[in-house]
Length: 386
Ligand SMILES: C[S@@+](CC[C@H](N)C(=O)[O-])C[C@H]1O[C@@H](n2cnc3c(N)ncnc32)[C@H](O)[C@@H]1O
Image (cartoon, rainbow, N blue to C red):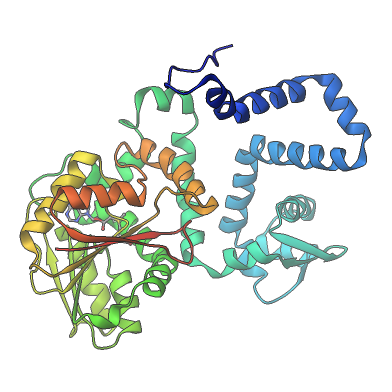
C-alpha cells in the first residue's frame, strides 16, 4: 500500500496516532472511489448537496480552459466595459458587440454561470461582483489578454513539465530572462512587458502602500521599477518623497518619459543599468524590489541581492514585495499559478517569505521582517536593513 511508516524512533502508539489522519484520508478516498457509496450519498439530501457541490467544482476545473476563454472573449469584445454602470438587453449587447443575438445570449449565459453577470430579468443583464472588477481594473483586463500567450505555451503541459520553458512564447516575451547583450534588450523588446507591468501595478501598489509606512523616508529608489507606476503611486500618497528608479536602459528611458508625463520629472531621477552588476544610486533611504526577485532563479537572486548590498548605504531599508507562497488561500493560489507561470517563462519561482528572508540574511542584510498585506494573493512583503 506504500504507507509503511518510516523509522522515526517514536513508540508504535505515537506512530499510529501520527499516521491517523493519513489512514482516515485513505479510507475516505476508498469510499468515494466506490460507485455504490456515491449512489448511497446521492439518496441522502444533505450529503447529495455536498457531493453535487464537489462535482460542480470538479466540472469547473475540468472545463476551466473553456471558461477562461469565455473570460477572454468577454474582455476582448468589451462586454464588461459595455455593462459598466448600466443594464443592457441581449439585443442591444448583440448590436454593440457586433455578434448574432443567439451567440451573444450563449456567451451571456456562460458568463452568468461563472458569476460574472446576472440576468436580472429575462434577457436583461448587469454585472455581478467579479464582472464589476473586470470592467474597472485595467490590470486585470491586461492580464486576461496576456494569458493568450500562456494558454498556447500550456497546450502540452506534461511536455512543459518534462522539458521546462526553454522554447516558450513567454520566454520570448520577457526579454530579460534570455541572454542579454551588454546594453540589455532593445526598446521594442521591452515595450509589451513594460506596458503590462504598468497597467497591472495599481492593486500591487495599493497593497504595498497600505502595509508599510513610507512617510519615514526621504528618497525612495525602485529597483527594476519598470515604467515608474509604483513610484508614481508612492509619490501620490507621499508628496514629499524624492524618487529614484533603476531599470534596464531601454526601460529606464520609458520610465523617464512616463514620470515626466505625470508631472513628476522634477522629483525623479532615472538610471539605466543592470541590477546584477552595476551600482544603483546610493542616496536612497528606502529601496523597493517589486515583482523582481520572483523572476529569477536562486543563484541570480543571490547575485542581485549581493550587488544591492554592495551599493546601498548602511541603514537603508530594503523592501521586497511580490506574490509569495504561504498558508492563506490567496498565497497558495498565487503559488500554484506562478509555479506554472515561471516554469513556462523558464526562469524564477514563487518563494515563501521565509525563503526570501533566508536569501537576505545570507547576503548580509539585517533586521529582517515579514509583513502581511491586505491581500496575500497579490503580495506579501519582506523588509530588511542594509
Ligand atoms: C516583472 S517586472 C516588474 C516591474 C515593476 N517593478 C512592477 O512591479 O511593475 C521586472 C522588472 O525588472 C527589470 N529588470 C530585469 N532584469 C533587470 C536587470 N538585469 N537590471 C535592471 N532591471 C532589470 C525589467 O526590465 C522589469 O522592468
